[in-house]
Image: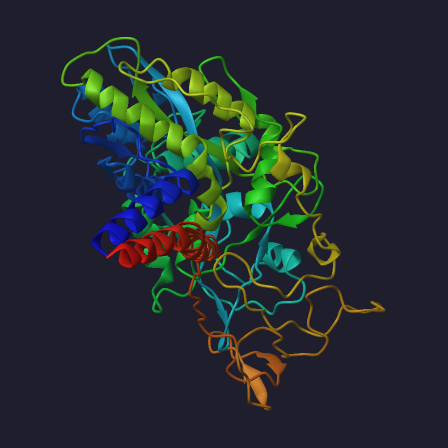
Length: 525
């Protein structure tokens, strides 16, 4: 029997070796690496670092802000940095000089800078707010200070917005998110932005800045890090606040974001597909940094205007300081992972996968890392969801068209955004409309989302004392969701089935001859 068991075990091991991926004969030994920088990209980097632990990699990251990350990399304190803006630009009259050692920029993930907000009408959280670019610019320069402002009402014709003070929440630290947001302000609304900068004591033209200026007495609040601004807005006591932050933070905190009006007059949310569409118009400089003027004014009605991508700053061509060949091997392996496999998670994390042209351009920089082991990146070896046979962006190709209720006019969609996917009760359908628009509520105060409403009396806005509708009651409060990793579940199920099938096959193939041999031996005895 011992011989039978040994034979069975050997057969099972042989079969599983054929069916399952084999471990490399000489496993690569990785050494720990560390990085710092962008909180905009933080959720993605943290997730990827967690994922590669299974391969023996230890990758640490501190989301201390883009400016701090660039400074740490320049000083040799960390092995890599992540930033939304490159070295060499003048910010507030100060030049951010590059490192003296050789380095390169490598795109890592795309996404939309969103406008996350905390606003209620009576007992209902607003989840479908719409804002034009000019209104956003006026809010963050102190020109529009109240949620009942006629310009905001014009963007939201079917919401009776409260006469509540707007509290803009900006970054207190040096931030790539601030740089991206103020770059958009300076390009699209230079007069508003320069007037505000003058009040803050800045020289003009103001241009972009990673340190958002705050003018005393304007009601702004400053918080450190993306977690800081998003967490401040989320607090129940901070109704009326709004901030600029990467879309993933609103998704993870179950909070809504404003739909932003694009050049085709559609109000669009920064989903993975709307960002992918917008970045088709991005101009890529020779050093892989981005020029986004055409993105801001994309003529595709599916595009989200405040779309961009983030860079990893990596050492190239030579070993210097504490950066060794072993560290280079680890950093390159990590980069290959997130350029391909890691992009599969971009959408679920609140980002948009890098387009294939940036993936291939990024690979060329990874190959320059000292100690890198080059790998192929193509449709067979790279699981990036933007890859398509003709070389175009597959995600942008299949991006859905916006709903007509998201078009500028007297109608608007009721459906929620970001991490708050429940509907906001709307006022009566617009005058003269024959049908109810997709996602819209057909009667005053009716909530078609996941909230529960039982009241039937008049609803009064606690801020204004105005009647804001009837029925609906206390509906649409905070809703949370549990994320289920269907891919992981499916992978686990398939592995279990594979093991069962392997065991069955071994039993069918090996047991009959082994039993026959045992019986023959017994007859001889």
